[in-house]
Image (tube, rainbow over all chains, first blue to last red):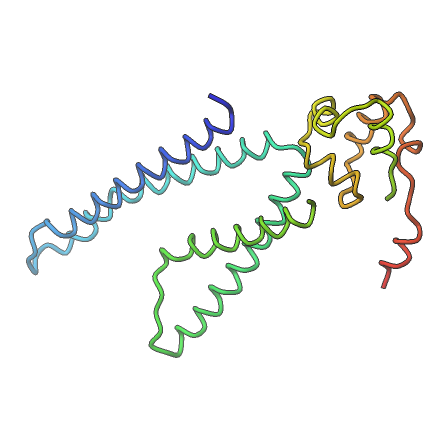
Length: 133
Length: 72
């Protein structure tokens, strides 16, 4: 298995485990007995999320670092531009949405933040890649 | 920065992929350097100089015209 494929495999396994933790958490929230006395219900339901999030965070950081180490200098430069674009875009958009949320009824789930960051990264990556083609 | 990479490569009858293999970089990097869209790092410039058995300044020359144009 090539190095790139191995890292991609690590990404997939991490996200699959995270997805399992999400589903487990959801099932616990649905099926734990509902009564006024069990205020621990949602805390217990959220428990699988913490180790899963920590695991995914560490694995993704490690796989990303190894992938970047494996790239040549131009590819690293392209990734830097893509990550910078993503950081700037996500920060600006999340601040704007947070600002709107402050004084209006508008609400957005935090789960959208990685999706927004991913979308900005993809745009930044395509833009940077075209620049050096 | 101007460079003679394309000429030097052609003299040896190498493709971009072959030169990339010699320098352990991607073909895209060679293409970007040849077309002047990307300036290589000093270590890569040294590797190129060693590969072609030349000095760095024999391969790369400063492009004063474009530098003057790009200044504010």
